[in-house]
Length: 187
Image (cartoon, rainbow, N blue to C red; front, side, top):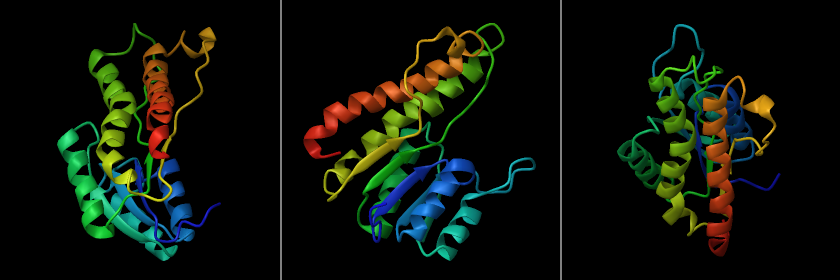
């Protein structure tokens, strides 16, 4: 892995799971981390908060900024980006990791759950990526990493959970489009 010493990385959904594991790995490589997630207080069923992750990041050798954010809301995302700039004076990498899941078909998926998956999965990739773009343009080696699957039109990915698959493929399609659009910036 490239040297991440002094690089600033925003990881959405970093209070637990894959996001937290990535953040800790980046910290071991010397990065500054923005722990971006909703969970600031312990959840009765899910372990991990932004503050727990920040402690683990600092213990691993990185610097951490725990930031409670609901990435569905552009104003909160913009506040998070500003806090990252205030603390670390730059942003080098965005990891779009946060997600919502419901493995149910169209018939059994309530509209509010469908909307939640679209907002957290596909829409947040758009909102977060746009928010960091001006700062990534100033980075020496900028990246946007989105944790989403390759597009596969096999019906097995749609028949039992088309709403979720659509939201994840939305993430992928945005990432493919941004890759081409932002190539001129070296992102």
